[in-house]
Length: 405
Image (cartoon, helix red, strand yellow):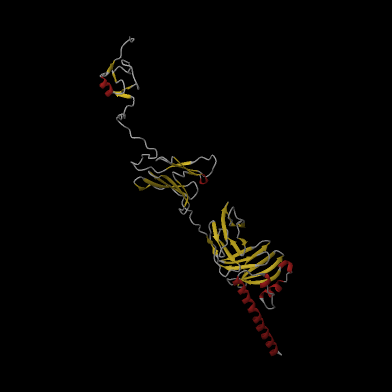
């Protein structure tokens, strides 16, 4: 009789171990895979397990102690005992070596626990997410990228951190707002836990690769164009690059004594967009015009708007010394002597005094007055040679005082 009883007890113990061990192994595998749904991870308490014995020992009603859902094995070996307290109210008791070391209670919103880098998120639906690592401690405000390429922005305002979505325009939607305690946010398949110091961790459901959020290093903005030096290209040709009124664009100014001014509007890569010169001195579509294109001192006008918007004027680079002469409108060379008249022009000059010689026949003894007090010699007739041949010679006219008789 005693032998049969001992044999029955031994058989029961062996059966209990055989049932319990696979259940724990399954729990550990789900924890390693990440989020655990109540529907897939739920396990009924088995007679002989610690959970069933503990629930029976307390002897409390289901309303007071909740309805046991499952035991969740965490990556660090601890156990989370999940119970349902209401439709959107769940509790997770964290046990290590049989001792309770913490409690999470999701009442209408998710909560998270962090045990030295091991995270457990309990949702108000009873679902859980658990992982180890993927944590960026003490993060500074900025944009961060998750392992799946999703980007979030950590902002600091009024002494508190917010985790937001990243939008192309405007401020992103708030995912997490810290109020002094650890907070949970969800973006797509990513579960985010933000600590009070700004550090945060992320787990992406379904991703084979997991990693901590990485700060996004935006490329440094391209430096704004500046006015370059004047470069001499030839004996009387100079060039200079200046900023355009359009951001990141430039204008190359060339001043050439023979060809005249030239202005080239370039894009960010230096590719020409518009070319102005002496023959094409304006492009209203691009807001460019050259003033004084036929001179050696032209100016470039730029504006971003049409209508009566004033131009911003920039002088072309100055030509080298000795090239200042304007060849567009050449002036005649000054003469120091008066050229001799060709043939009979009807005028004679004597010491700066000019007299008009009558044309045609002139009566002998005709008197012509000359300006000034000097004596003017006047040749009468068709020429001095003709007069000499006639024996008339020159008639000397003198200014008389008073009336002529």
